[in-house]
Amino acid sequence: MKIADIKLGMSGITVEAKVVEISEPRDVNTKYGIRTVADAIIEDDTGQIRFSLWEDQIDSVSVGDNVIIRGAYVTQFRNVLQLNIPKAGKLEVIKQNLKEDFI
Image (cartoon, rainbow, N blue to C red; front, side):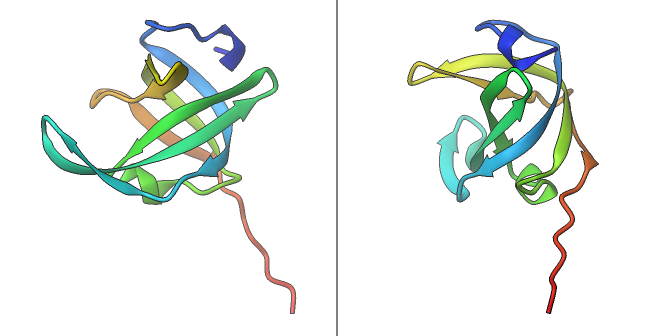
């Protein structure tokens, strides 16, 4: 699915996109206790959308990585659509951003 086609309330979404931004992780109080979350922005050729990275997912991706998100659902927070991955969903890095240092 393309990002431009994503609408509030959709679920079971599969999206392939590039990670363009990741916020600093922060601790939030959830019904499951205190958990760490970071906001990422992903994009494809049709647009951008916010994406929540929880716990171990935060360190599994970097800015510039291409990812496939499977089984995601769409919510809205502060009038901004965002993708979320349920426990049954999957986040897979398909192409890492390889940083090369030239000395």
